[in-house]
Length: 470
Image (cartoon, rainbow, N blue to C red):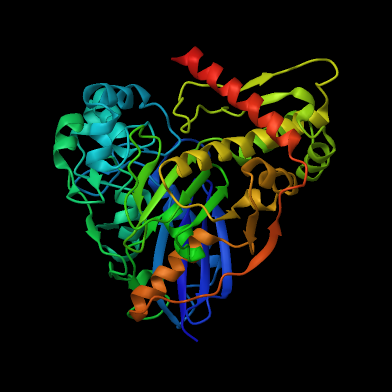
């Protein structure tokens, strides 16, 4: 048996899976936590990778033929000439660069940015974070020699090569996945210089060979890696007409398209995928943590929270929660906070509050799906993945909220599995056709009046908040 190793370096943890290269079945797995927060020392990721790598037994294997990394998108990893970080990596969910992103839009307009890099400036993207560094930490900015993304930094540690892929580069704000590649003029304008940038490898390209210190056998090839959502799409074998709803720390809704989406509003990101196509995507900062935070407020564990949410009134008794606890990206409201409306003595029960939290997450995802349809992305099938797919409460309300059936693939680490699939592709030269197992099909109910009532109230509350913040 030949095996491949897939790595998922996410916001919260590092996961390592060892996969049979022929069948796609996972034969070993391990994980290690990352520090909490929106800025992290990159070496913490390396320490977590070493721990998960060791616990998965990779170093002792002699059948490994390939390795690849899927990583959280957008994060700014800036290093000096010695390769040492000049500042903590600012993660995708760090919104301190909101003033810089706002100025970028004001300077050129949304359409101008969409035409050049396929996305509108937001605090998540690397370019706005570099602009923040230049303005707020000028001494650190002066020392920057190289800029890369989280998965690029780990690939560098694995094989010594400074490379990236289209999917992650397309989220930087200075890369045009549909045409010209890097746009150095944008770095000059907003960072004041052009640091060395990683070489962009084609899908299925070879980054290098695994360093001996990692073990795993001789001549193990390392793939270019991918952004986490592109890796998840690769793990699922996502096809056109299929849309993934992923619920974890963030919520993401993305499809597969042969052409880049052109959303003149700038809400839909025109990311590249890991196969040479495109991955039109919308992301919310607030997802599963809305439910866990509400559970903590109620003094409930997750089982009790599920019981409460399913026992609440179907429309949460008139309660409407806007789940923007940490600001929000879709809609682009980095200064927003959560809102709870419709409170009466009758409505404000533990059960209704739990249900309102679940419905708020479902409606935030439904907003994203509606936007995706509006830019002509085909939506024939919805796949639900991530930790949220294990929530009975969310699974119970999502089909009615989205207005269509939802398929739940077998629970798996799809980002890590996608990285493993890329590793097998790179190592063998052939794209592996691994099967996709679906664990359950969720159908809309025959009576969705409560879902429609909450959705209408949610839309009204969101529009009111957007007006208040404008």
